[in-house]
Image 1 (tube, one colour):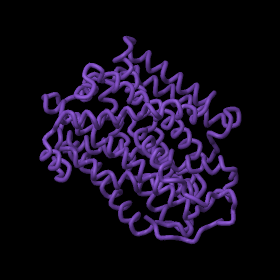
Image 2 (cartoon, rainbow, N blue to C red):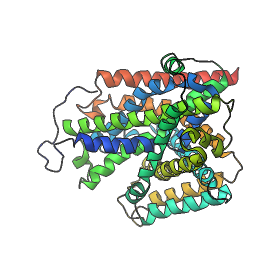
Image 3 (cartoon, rainbow, N blue to C red):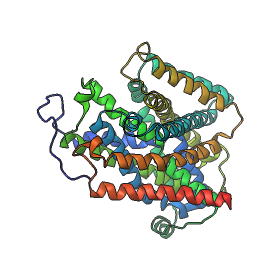
Image 4 (cartoon, rainbow, N blue to C red):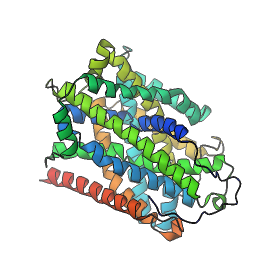
Amino acid sequence: MDQPRPKPDTDDPTRPREGGSFLHALGTGVITGAADDDPSAIGTYASAGARYGLAFLWIAPVVLPMMVVVVYVSAKLGQVYGKGLFAIVRDRYPRWILYPLVLGAFTGNVIEAAANLGGIGAALNLLVPVPIPIIVVAAAAAILGLQIFGSYALLRDIFRWLALALFAYVAAAILAKPDPAEILRGTLVPQIRFDADFLSMIVACIGTSLSAYIYTWQSNQEVEEEIALGRHTLRQRKGATDAELRKTRRDVVIGMLFSNMILYFIILSTGATLHQAGQTEIESAAQAAAALEPLAGAGAKYLFALGVVGVGFLAVPVMTTGAAYDLVQGIGRKGSLHARPSEAKLFYGTIAAVTVVAVGLNFLGFNPMRALVWSGIVQGFSVPPLLLLMMLMTNDRAVMGGRVNGRLTNGLGWITTAATFLATACLVVTWVL
């Protein structure tokens, strides 16, 4: 994506000189890509397929390059500058720009975490006859306990394989035997309607596939990996070798390809089953699970619950921790998952507070499946301004040095930025009119 640049710090023995094996990246990419499709994404894509059928398949190839470029530039920011996203914004921009962006991203993370906890509760409620709010409280307590007393790595290792249950949508879509000509037409010929419902679904799909929490999490995880390698000072973390950036590009492309494939097949399976049967509104987890019946029959609810719980237990810690990153960096404080709770009280306190608020929102009586879609819309409105700043920063030599964006990254990045602004602007216009 970027033109080759001179390697910085090539004599540093702690910097990896190889990009890792392709097979390792493939395995990591499959898991990461599946895990990126959190409960909010599953609910949004399933609702899109049920409502608009195979005519909505075009959204997958359209957002794929957007997903790749957004995750790549956020990763590159953390790798090259050595700080998380909002720490960089604080260094480079005035407070009147910083604080609204932090507030928007923080609020989006809280709402997304609440919706995803509700999605976990709705999915488990298919298997356990316990009220959804009680399941939400138990799930949140388990996640928070592992974050504070265990580690996210432990949580990831426990639940990341469950995310592979989402591949059941691939098999279900094939077994539903949709019309190949209709699939081809829906994939290659965008059918756009300028009404509020349709544009809301586009913004929700963009919001869930390009969620703001991905930006902050990705940039901060690059920093966390640097710290894990013993690079504790900013001077040690600054810069990136050609091998590191190649590995990042490869991992991002593989991960987003698999994530996008899941997006595509969720819409295809729900479009070929629910939409074809006239069930165009998804009001419950049971209805969303019904799209898997061509594959699993009566066991569809088990597959659906397995996938949602797996990605939910992966995604919720990302959102609550992402909110903590946003807050501490926005006010100029430090916070890291490598620090003990006693060493980073504000950081871990924010994680706990966000979890409590997210749980509380589930007691307001919102429909969990509808909440998943609306959380995507909220995220969709925070995408354009953050993406604009990311593109400006990755073209700023004071931030990136010689690692500014190449032509391909800039082309894709600016098209993505313009597209996200246009989609949200069109939605606002339809609301006003």
